[in-house]
Image (tube, rainbow over all chains, first blue to last red):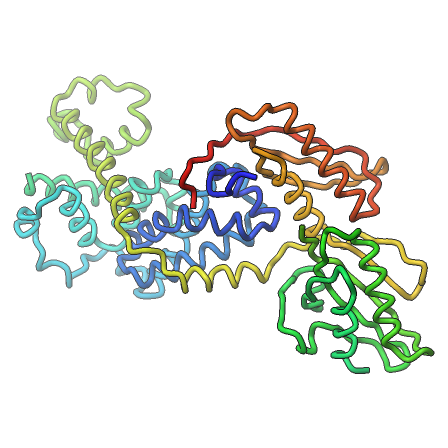
Length: 181
Length: 96
Length: 186
């Protein structure tokens, strides 16, 4: 038999849906790092990210039957991560504060970031400093590839709110990446 | 009726690899536990009409239905001769 | 006219335009140099974002084995046993059965044991005519597909006869995938 490690996502997802824990373990090893990086960008905390991903993977395991297209298992897990991350973020602070600047990160202003050696680092720092709600929308749109409707559902808001937050995030990113250049 | 005696009788059957928890959630859980844990043998019913349930993992080199029947017979043999117990044997895994 | 490059369009509207794949085409935006510059920047930052998360993933520390172990322990608790499939017994006080989960697992193992084959989905559905078994498999590149599928069908049928008392109506094997084994798969 071939090693399960060479199997496609779709095959591993099908076997996992049928109860194969070994196939599930292969999926977790394969996509775990991305899911944790995604969760860290969403929650802004590596520790929270670890918990969020573990909860999401367990929830996903229990709901695998509802995955319509097994080939899309990574994105499907990412959307569960996104919802769990939303819960985690809300547990930290009231909803009203999600649009406020994260004051504690303001000391790393655009001029400071201009000295950063890499574009990726610069973008990362800008995203870290965005208000929570805007950062979530950016991460879900640009890293997750989700639609406005999907983002609204995952964050428990509306398309109008998502559109507004994304626009404000984009304005900030454009302005601050310009300084970096 | 001593569950550990029943458990030992089940383990002695050729073809039996291990016992799983025969939980109330019936088919929902197949969790392997250490020998001697009472919950590997589920006892229910009254002392006159007990029901005994086990969940086993078996060796695929032997026909599973045959192993299941042997397990039931082993449990039956471990009970008092006049016992009217209902025995339920569930095969939860067949390993190659 | 206001908006970006005096096009009359705001950043939010340009974002909408980008997100809808620049369709339907809007010449007021497409022909405006500043709008195009902004759209190009937005696209670039999107790509950078994806690079960023991929870089984060690639540079993350080695897998935390205890985190992984705790996760798998949770997952193993729900083994998807499915229904109990009855096995006959001469003694009316004895009830014998095999779970659907056990059947699916040994069917998978039988298919996996065939050279170059990996089993995907295994489903059992019963009707008056008996149980229809449907299996999807992936074959290793280079493996003759028809022969592999037939070998799997025979192996699975044999195992079902051996370990169950199901009336098998059919065993269908469908090849839905191809895989390549790299020398260093771990």
